[in-house]
Length: 613
Image (cartoon, rainbow, N blue to C red):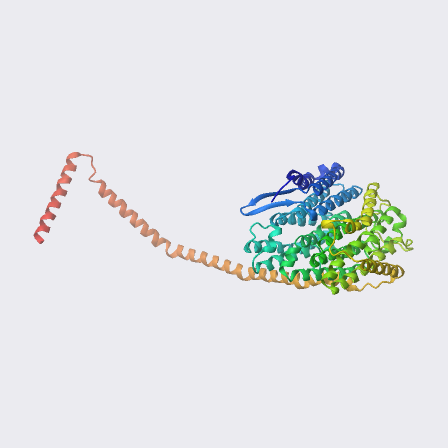
């Protein structure tokens, strides 16, 4: 593989990884400088990402026998490294305004995660991707459970980690199947050439891992609990990077999906179903972060749909525009949580009026999320829908319905934050500060501009940014009118929208997982433990007791005769020794006499033998 500017690529991933590890390990000693140092480092990472996007560096080296370690920035990954760098900087700036997050542990974990994400999006071999994938999972668990004394946050972190780790096993399956199928280098570009049935095993493993990481059906439920983490964590991990990593992997490996035949339509339908169903889940939420989390699953569904429908460019611009939009919304929700002490929609009435800058920027993000023209997600979603229409009118219909639902949940959130404050008080979830930190305002403004303008990329872009097929004018007009109509209708009915329990509870998938997987597994483990205690342990203890009793019986009945026999042999040997020592006098004439007697005996024996013959 040709390589250029390898030092730039090494610096891009090494700076956040090394600095993050140092800050995390330094502990409280680094707390005082953690916030400003992490912001400076994030700015450096963004600068390096910009240089990498222009220069397109590549690096390839042997890892182990036959397997390569490759990193490269190409048209697809260039947009992702810029996205990761930009969102990281904005999130760390906002986090610097929250006293509880100005710690070395928080800044270090965020930088470590960003470094792992940068390796993920630049990896060209499955071996490197796997290593970065694991670091992402571990750091995401630590960040969700950042408030370690919050038992609910810790449980949510465990749920997220175990769910995604279960799906991640698909990547290990894919790696083994790729080697068995003749792809010894584990190069991502070579995976579609896997021989025989191993191709389908590789594809299935990749699809399961990607759907799990991106919180698509049926894995969506873990993202609900992950909202227990700090809002800046949600803005980075659960909108722009980690949940997008699975969609990115599917976009990167779209040729593999096509090569397997069954995978592309399956992935497309899973994405479309998630976009629609999780959109309905978002409509039913009364917690702003839960609404944003469900909408994240739904919007990631469009990227997954694009990967299955062959719209790699459309999925990429959807990913970038959604990252800016959803990061903005999560950071605004976090600002209100700090300022007002609640994230309940009923408790956020009047929040946009009380904090106008946050309200205006949140409105830009929500309108973009709704697909209102001419904001970002209006164009990017239509680019995805154009690819879907090229594959199947039914896919297009489901995606268009999901776009209308997106306008409903976005307008619902807007309605609550712009309504006059409710006359009844809502008990705050934490002590409100009554203000929004000044350092949080510039990132919100910049992200609002990006959320509004990134939709021009599909219209202006070339290469990876030019969707094919491009949406027709009638498609753009239809979706714009549909989104506007749904938003206007929702504005009139926002406080009367139905919220079925099954939707408010995220379809009950987590309960179903507990019923179908967790409880049977724990029951089996308990049964095996009882079998171990009552059967195996008793058998081992019984064998030990039998051995001890046999040893004692032998000691009583067999030890004395054996000792007597050994003592008799020893006594005989001593007697023979005494008899053998008697001739040993040290006198030469006695030795001659003994020799003479011996020779005489031998001569006599010889005569007798001759006579016998």
